[in-house]
Image (tube, rainbow, N blue to C red; front, side, top):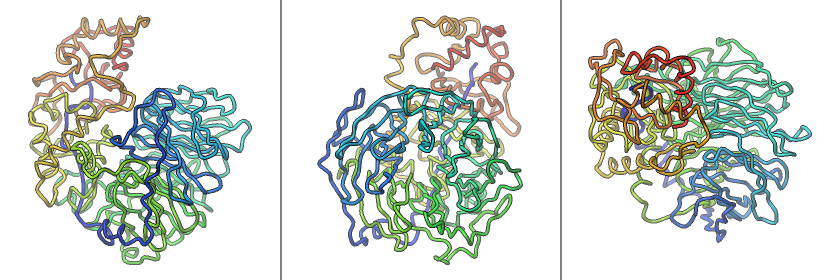
Amino acid sequence: MKWLITAALGLMVGAALCLAMFQDHATTTAAAADVVAADSSAKPRDAGSGRPLDDSTYRNPRSLAISIDRKSALVANTGGSIALVDLETSAKRDELSLPHVPWDLQWVGDNQAVATLRGSGEVVELLVKDGKLSAGRRLSVGLEPCAIAVDSSVNPPRAYVAVSGDDQLAVIDLQTFGLIRKVKVPGIPQQVLLSPDHKWLAVASQVPGKVTVFETNTLEVAGEHKVYTDGFNLGPMAFEPGTGSLLVSCAVNRGFPVSFSNIERGWVIDNRLLRMPIPKGELGEQEQLGLDEFQKGVGDAYATRVSPDGRWIVITASGSHELIMVKRDELPWMPGDPGDFVRPELIGNKSRYRRVPLAGRPLDFEFIDDRRIAVANGLTERIEIVDLDSGAITSSILVGIDPTDKPLSRRGEETFYDARHSLHQWFSCHSCHPDGHTAGQLFDTQNDRNYGAAKLTPSLFHVAQTGPWTWHGWQRDLGNAMKRSIEETMQSDKRSTAEQQAGLVAYLETLRPASWVGPVSARSTPPDDPAWHAGRALFFGKGACDNCHQGDLMVHDDSFEIGLKSRNDDDYKFNPPTLLGVNLRRRFLHDGRSRSLRDALEKYHAPEKVAGEKLTPEELEQLLHYLNSL
């Protein structure tokens, strides 16, 4: 069982040039005539089981939803709260502390909304009255729910939730706040979107990159769209007016070695906008638009929206800190591969294509009207109102904290999500390790000291405690690994500093799955679960998995030959990766050859091929049950 999963640290990928798009971010922000830094007196209140929030707790705004009257917005802060902001006065009105990573939210009516709590596996009802927030009913929906979509046109209204950890779509009756049913959606579903006519529901999965379209009346699958050319990190989607096509941004793995020349040519990771026919469509009908310019990449394209008047498609680029604006009716869509860069006829023509710089990490956004958008900026702790005609930030609403001295881990977090720390800002650490996890992609770095044997990108959850690092276990110094990541994998045009390296290590020390609570040693044993206890006994007995996956962290200090050498791989030995959080991964072994944990245990990494004995089908089920609880 030694190598069951994605392993130790493979050097993180990042991206960036130290230029901002039209001008320096700080200059742009300072030039906005009426920027409002609204330090509200609203203090967070605990809605039950929430984490304490104070002036030292970063909020990290991720998602927002604007009210029906367009006067206020709710903000999901992954630091542990929901904020209510007034868009007219640019002030935070109220804040509610909620448990374990709020992730997404949507309004149901004038005074009611719903939000996903990724850490606690719940959907929570939010009530708004007289400028105050309160939490209503809660419903457990599964492991790590992400995006949520609401259909208020039906009676009773419904919510659709992407439950990423369980590979499911949960459908909720919002009148009774009860579960209607769950539908299987493989591949870590994270995004959901209801079509304007309410006929179709699009669900985007991450590993592999794929969009599944459901017919809302029956919840039957009406179409499936695999992203052409290995797309990954699919962001929040939009439906295109007129055509009814689905728009979604993503990164594309070009499959070439991660070298200076390949990064410069756009041959490692591209950022693209996709257009798919809905509900059905052949792969050849999928159209793409390259977003990157030569030597000026679009790091981490994320949310896509269409302006209410239908003129502009706007995309946040969270790694290169900008908004990408493209004129919808004049886009040179390309079937299949669009090439390495944005079409040359768009560059320099601001009436068709613009890049608006923003500081921080712009993520989700919504249009207030045809001209203005509200952006959740994850690292500035603000909701920023941007005028798209001028590109200026007209107001900035502080929803979190704004300290003068940032802790080392926060500075490391900023480095992790910043695409300007590698060559021409094509990608960031987050690109290959989204939110500290894994994009499930293979990249050919020099993590094995050579090119030619691409390796699966490992999850970084618990990574600071689970050395040695790299698939072959030769890296014993995490700080040195960060140095090599920036200078050799990211090909930064500047040498990394000791402070950057220490900051990244400090941030990595904080990375856990959203659903993880408490230290490893405090993990509870299910008292009344015979299958779990039987699986654990097999792990430490007949399966002999603990020969290599040892201790609370389930790792080993040595590397072993287990017969899984890849072509062009000079090293026959592999270091046992941790099994903690294995249930959140969808590709396994160093070259990703197994697409499920079951496949790994039945074929390439069966216990009898390593150190244990052959398991019966019933025993295999018990062992899987145990492993999926880790």
